[in-house]
Length: 243
Image (cartoon, rainbow, N blue to C red; front, side, top):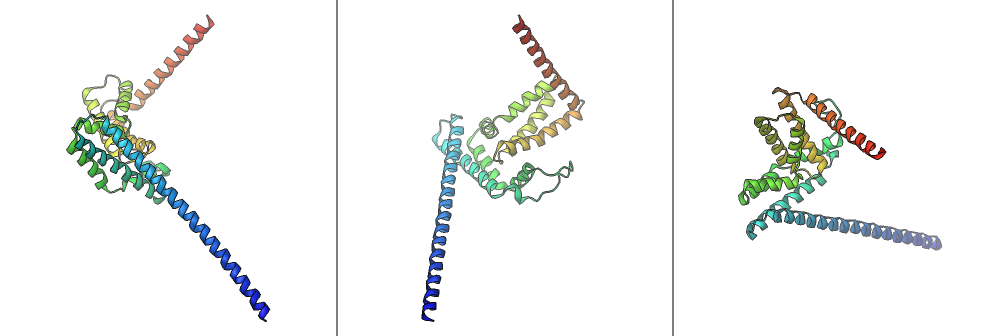
């Protein structure tokens, strides 16, 4: 009996040692993951600070106080957008359909919906702060940095597609693009930013369609023209090679 008890005690002790070792390994793994997460966050914060500094430097404000204030506003906003995006993945929005098209919501659709619920104060704090320190032209320059110049790029596209674009048409198109730009700064990456611009590009197409234009026909004429130019250039190159 004494021998059996001793054997049982030895077995229990061995199991306890295994459990302690497993717990220690799990704790070490958890600590490593936490450290990695903290390291990644520090790196991300540094990148946001660097980006904010570069954007402010491009404004050439020549005012150290304003530069510091605007840099802090931009960096804080970039970090807040990142954190909200990371804490609210597309999976937080149930799968469903787009009520306007009937198509299933894409993962990008669901991510945009999740981010759109971000507290408005995050956006308002940035916009109020930079407008207190910058001219409207400088504010627009900052917003263009966020969206890599999509307003000018898209407007140039309209000028290529729409024949004899009128001053009034251009004003409406630009106003919508600027609304897209300001809304898009609250989104993390270019896929999401492009999705916001698509909303306002659709508004622009609808405006043109209801004011004597036909977007479908104009776009087709433009793409046909581009294809024709490419074909002509290719034929000319082939003829040159043959000679």
